[in-house]
Amino acid sequence: MPGFFQEHLRPLAGSAGLHVVLLAVLAGAALRWQSEQPPVELAIEGFVTELPPQKPAAARPVPSVPAPQPVEARQPPAPPAVEPPPDHRAEQAVAAERAAQAQREAEAQAARDREAQVAREQEAERARERDAQLAREREVADRAAAEKRRAEESERKRVEAAEAKRKAAEEEARKKAEAAEAKRQADAKAQAEREAAVRAEREAELQRLLAAEEEAAAFARSGVVDEYRQLLVQTIERNWIRPPSARAGLECTLYVTQAPGGTVIDVRLGSCNGDQAVKESITNAVFRASPLPPPRDPRAFQRRLEIVFRPKE
View 1 (cartoon, rainbow, N blue to C red):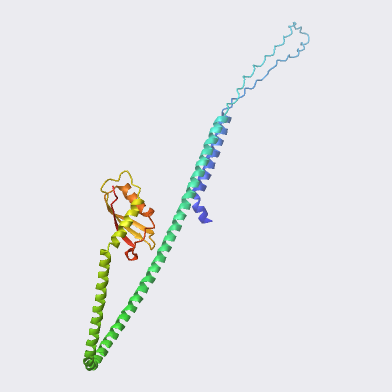
View 2 (tube, helix red, strand yellow):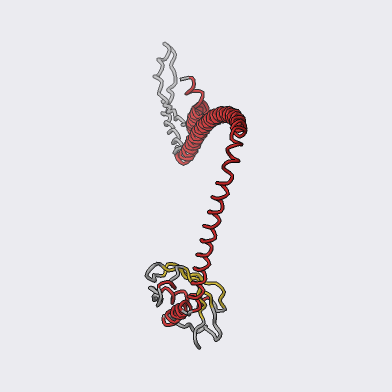
């Protein structure tokens, strides 16, 4: 509870102050209305009454005195007209509106204070989460560093053990070499014979390679490969839709990748003196020509082809 009052002290104080101001405004309006009422004049009515005649003294004749005439009663003046009190409802409405406006401002301020408090609490929560994340990262880093140190220590021990083993092996090899020197001298002749056999086998392999190369050269000279390339160029040219921008002397190098059976997998353009429309039309022609025709001799088939495309004028 103390925490609640501390957090909401400003909103509560503002609300209480607003109510006090509202009561003071209403009390001042009531006092002003009472003080402005005009005083009411009271009219007092008066009447003159006749006195009874006195008896004459004995033995003295009193001359007759005419009886007094009655005094006419004066009519009291009419009281002045009392003006109605001025209408203070407009002022009261203005005062009430000001009080309501002050109440709304106080409530808005209280809402802003609450939002600020919530924002501070959220920021504090985010700060706690960041601190926790940093702590977790430091813990992970410490574990990684410890693991690295253990790995380095293990590697150092392994290297030391391997070095000791190597030295022991070298020593053992040296001893065996001294013991086997005589045997090596005895086996030198057999080793020379084996080496001669290996050289003879290598020479035979070289002769086979040379024969295969000669056969490939003869195959190339036979014109089968050139015939296959010309067949491919003709097939591509038949599927080529010549764009209007194609000019005379067009020459483009094509790098075509085909699967067994002639299906075109990929087409790349090398040097080409045509514009973009021409290049795209040639690439599309290769794909339209798929599958490409097979060569007359299956040995001429190549997965990767380099074709120079020079269409006829």
